[in-house]
Amino acid sequence: MRFSGPNFLGERAPWSSNPVNSKGRFFKESESTTRSVFQRDRDRIIHSSAFRRLKHKTQVFVYHEGDHFRTRLTHSIEVAQIARSLSRFLRLDEDLAEALALAHDLGHTPFGHAGEEALDEVMRPWGGFDHNGQGLRIVTSLESRYAQFDGLNLTWEALEGLVKHNGPLVKKPGEYQALPWSIKEYKYFERLELHTNAGMEAQVAALSDDIAYNTHDIDDGLRAGLFSIEDLLEVQLVGPVIKEVLELYPQIEHSRVIHESTRRMIDRMTQSLIEETQRRLNKHRPETAEDVRNMPEPVVALSECMRKANQHLKSFLFDRMYRHYRVNRMTSNAARVIKELFGVFMEEPECLPKNWRTSFTKMTETKNRARIVSDYISGMTDRYALDEHRRLYSSYEKNEYLQ
Image 1 (cartoon, rainbow, N blue to C red):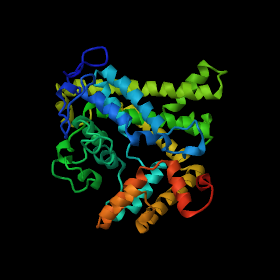
Image 2: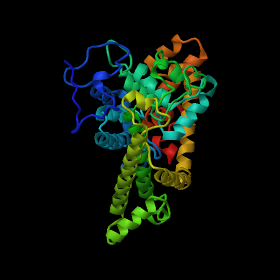
Image 3: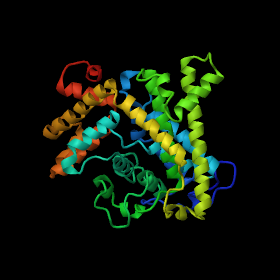
């Protein structure tokens, strides 16, 4: 017996991913009698070591900058909430969308994009570093929890959505030269149909990430004092919402203006997504999940007007937040920490923990040794990376590096 019923009110859409019709797992195992295969995927992601480490991985601010700033974990939970709500309304599989939302940041390094860029730079001679490919590597290989297999043994739909949530990776089958090595190394990567769109649940998770990312960066940027509410008044999408809130509640305190504005922004963006997605469904009229994958464009999307407003907001955040001198100072020092850790572990593998050192010494090719060091560093939290750097390089206090 396998659980097969939808976990939301209303009939499942014919183009949704149905757990009963899942393409299954690459390692055959008995399924749960109380959970659908996608619910089981979600639970395995939540219980993974990589998911727990997101608690101390950041996107813009380093973990000790303040308790109110988002971490990769809190961000992933916010993305999952939006993805669940949208999937329920669109009659998709809510559990698969949630699983993909919770897993989308598993492959990220410590110190956000600065850490990823630094690791990609030092790994360039051996294929670079790609957080999307690293996420696949984690769930198919690096997690070591189960007696029967490495990784989490997720369903085909979960793996496909994890790799392709931002769209097809190649134009047609066989054109794999430009793929990150971390994807090509997975022995079943060709079966993930990298030339097609992902299912609707993955598309929902991807845009939920975009919605959560921009709105919470406004919140964090305001709280950090990188810009003011007045600075946002001329920004498309944000400015009209803030003006609306201030007109309705002229005496409202600053913190409530932030929250009320960001929640209204999320509502407007999700409404835009629902309307545009419905328009595309009416246009293409898919009848199955495979029809969605083979469409000439993604079916889940923001309207053109909202997409342009969203891009205007991203440009503002890039100029006023991501390139702020405080953030630049943090990212510069973060990059130095990553590069120096990589250098010392490559030159002195005896500094690696025992299990990583054993894997390193078994390898004879420099390429494979570098990838082991990359796996180790990318899995670190901000705090652990700082502590490791302090132990290896100096006796300074751990917070001194990124202040």
